[in-house]
Amino acid sequence: MNFLTQIDNLALIALLLVSGSALFLPTLSTLIGGKGLSPTEATIWINRRKAYVFDLRPEEAYKAGRLPGAKFIKPSEITTAIEKLKLDRNNPVVLVCETGAHSRKAIAEVKSLGFAEVATLDGGVQAWKEAALPLVK
Image (cartoon, rainbow, N blue to C red; front, side, top):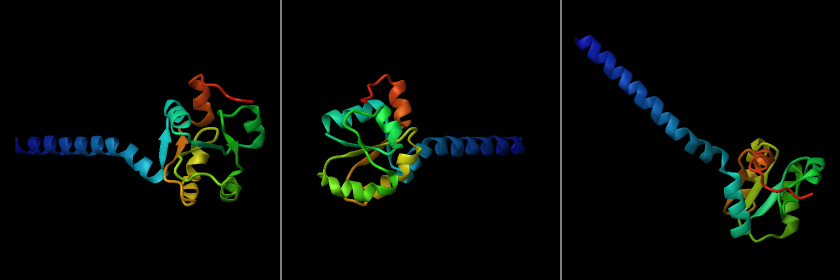
């Protein structure tokens, strides 16, 4: 009987650890990779909070269709391009790429330029299209 109780306790502890990890992983991901916005949240940032939108995709993809108000920036020239724009550092920034993976890598660099809030569009332009939101050509 004592042995079965110990097994039950171990199972409960394992369940607690797994569920706790599952709850904490999204927070950890945000802390490491920065904030990710859904297409709806990105729209709110753009329309209500006057967020700057920087498109980090290849120029051909940018020309084929971009988020409204997005500016094309080569990922290798982020600092130079943003410095030339002389932007208000109090406004938030939304970084966009095709899937959201490449723009996450640029968050730290943009934050180092003095912007308080920097986020990526989760799922990138693909998620924007799936949400049936307009692209500008």
